[in-house]
Image (cartoon, rainbow, N blue to C red):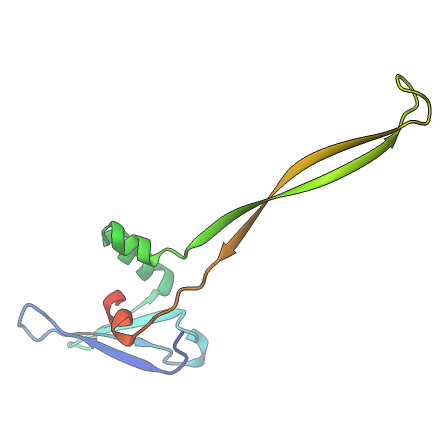
Length: 126
């Protein structure tokens, strides 16, 4: 995550010159990039939450873009074998040891962090 103040200017593809700018970390209250400030060529400013921008990008992306945005979570299931030992009081010979084995599944989740390989990949997301 970028911790420095950063401005990014997106070009207007309509040819009218109405470029849209994005600024992050403009003061210490919004670090690290909790809010994004958008500004247009007329001087209007709009501040939105980073989570809202990500949900909008997710909504308009196709299936491959959406899969790229989701943090990969791998679920693993480990089987642990436990042995329980009891001493019988009734129905068996008194004092006889009864051993019961049980396989208990234990689910674990492993979150793999996403690694950006180049700055070009970052601009494709924005």
